[in-house]
Image 1 (cartoon, rainbow, N blue to C red):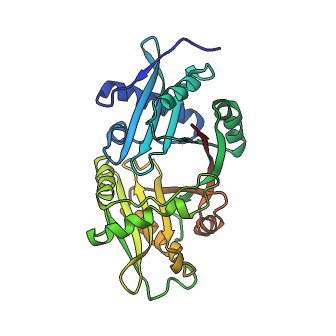
Image 2 (image 1 turned 60 degrees about the vertical axis):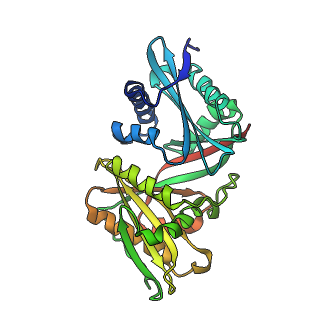
Length: 328
């Protein structure tokens, strides 16, 4: 049964409104993700307000004066054709049409150049993902673009071996906290922009989106504002150029799993174990940092290369993720 709600934009500068949005998001996410630990409130609000290359709109659904649902539309400046949509509804207001109305509201408010809407969701099992797609996403016209599996590593007990042969001596592996050296940032930005484009991504057809030096600095600054630590490892080739990269972000709350941002080895340097080598280097540094006891990451279900590395390192499946999309 539907309920009567009013929908309006939320003011990003209003602490009270965003605190209410945080409460709804936390309640909705905890309802479907067992053991999920949210970012702290101030950290989440900082992400919503960040001036880091994204245009953001938040919309709230109100039952009287009570905020019962929140949706966001986010479009990156370097991919103006794609709008990421996220919808959360408080458990007490679910299955009453609130989510459908919120989704349509943010879609209608998207920037003019947007030609595709994309959304992702996490559920404990693939069966629960299928239920979400059939019961909600398809009603909005969304189709499955790809699926991913979220895996988690027990960082305390992981062996973290670099591999039987290690990495070739022609490559130098180094690890950096809260930013790689400035002279490497442009090169790292190129690799970061290749992560999604070069891995299997179903029907998403991601294109390279290099991260500029300024955007890289903004990402590091936001993480520091949120009391999160960024740990990155790179491999340098014989000429000193960056040929492999990975990054882990460690949360402020020790109960929250650290998150691997991505891993990328340039095509001409693959086959030497560099992906595993930089990932192990970052995970070891993450353990030495001492704040995290678990690390999570996800990869496309067709990405057999990365899935094999993660399994060999001791990562185990914990959740399923679906990414859906529709054309405007």
